[in-house]
Length: 276
Image (cartoon, rainbow, N blue to C red):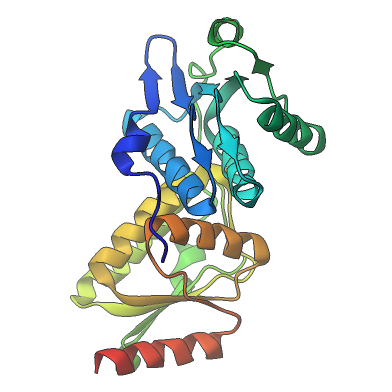
């Protein structure tokens, strides 16, 4: 796997939270983003920092001064940016974009139905943000999508094969409450076994919506670290598979995605042979 050009400390210096004005300021100034790995690392860090604040909604102030985004990195940059905005932005403004970056952003704005809010300097961008109303005063009620009855049949242990089969088929994780409900239930089932398992996960028609991704990534990582001998996923749709592969690229895990359950079981057998 190629090594990222950006370190965590490099990225951390570029993300600042102004609590009084509820603004998250992100600086891409002087960066040349040439690959999706660095893009995904940057957005992973932003998501983690937002989660640490305890507030899910922020105004976004984004500095594009002297930023260059290669065409090969643009899809990941655009995709992750839109997901972040959808999940956590009360309003976003961008400033000091180069002509090339400006055209890229405006082209996306024309095809993806969002307002680019581009300004030539920070003061103008900041002034625009300060006119926008905060949405934090509105209590966000996350209505659970699942009950225990919906989940009880989705976890199956195969002791002879050391496999825990998890069926996420046809589930849509709408927000962090859904993620916590599902992973709390999985942990309740797996902890009494007092052992680690190979995870076999059915992703057929599974959707992980933007507001759920931060929590989904964190809970999945924690569960794998504590209880997994190896994880294999199968039957993921194109969008979900692409999201998993993007996360895997920057978070240093193998996506291990197969088309069918049979192919997934064959991969688990290969994993066992390597550790035998």
